Length: 370
Image (cartoon, rainbow, N blue to C red; front, side, top):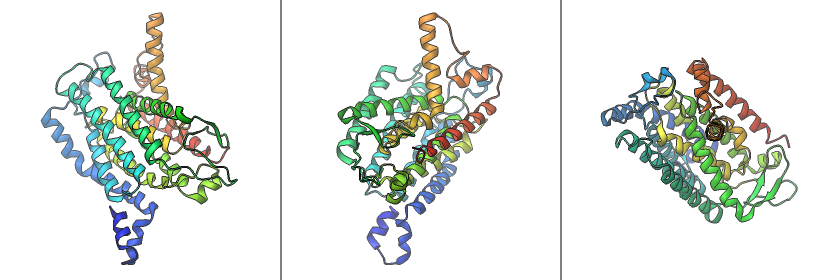
């Protein structure tokens, strides 16, 4: 909205020019969304208590989790509300990809809300049917990626050697230039990324502050990448695709990081609220969508290594039990395995944060080491 004010007033008065600086708007978006999270936090928690949107804890899990039963869920409402309000205030609403990211977050948040509603209010065991939820996820992924690749996506600029990049090019970390043009196959590949990312973050949401903190590390990292990708001088220096308008994604990602930090104020151990699928599904899908827009699809498994590890632990556990009738881990996802192994919840979360920061640094280093 403030960007539109700048476009309307132009140079009169001159101080409106500050709204044209992406760095300023990104900083303010983060601070604003954090403020909104603090402001709405207690109000949303009390509202959820009144509506009895309470979490039901697994009976086969760690005994320490029994005390969490009754904690309100759907805290993702706090995140999505703060994110969208801040994005509307500070984002460039003329950037269609920026609006597409907002649409991605909102659509997956609504899906997650429906799942939480069925579990908490309708008392449907397990919530929405897995097949129905999966098919809706696929549908949303197809719609979002189709819009990007065939409507809103802009052709990447040339590198410093004059080589033209394509929107369907596939880049691999630490390797210079694209390795393959996937062409029409980029669409199903991108849908797979969104689906995998959304469910991986959903599986990670099992300890107080775990999903919120690790996603915040990933979004802040992608915010830096989006800024340099949308800045011609920086993109050419790093020899990465110059993506016109991509620096605007940093405003959205800063707002998302700020809303997550605000949410962690209430979600840190002992949690006053859980994000539920209302938050985790849209956070994962948004990470996947941003990675696609930044041509960092293959960097996402590195940056989101925590989420990959959590998802793989479930796949291996289920596969092993069905094939051999034996479990690999004491419990899956793997963070519960560490709990049953004797580690305290807070220590597990902190160590996962440290791993997430290390993976973020490796991802950033791949911009130049190629």
